[in-house]
Image (tube, rainbow, N blue to C red):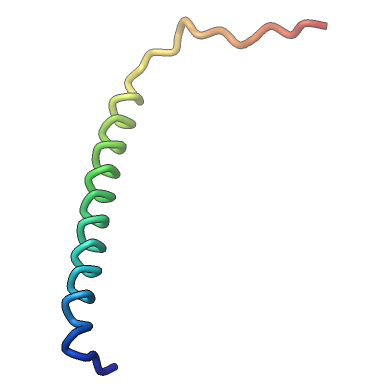
Length: 54
């Protein structure tokens, strides 16, 4: 595709926004995976299943 000279700055801005959004998404995935890894160490011995009420 051929871009006009006036279209190129807008294209660069949209690519910059896309890269920024991807960087934020990667950081959030890393933070979520770390908190999930810490959550695996929770001790569930005192957790009781709900009682069935009839």
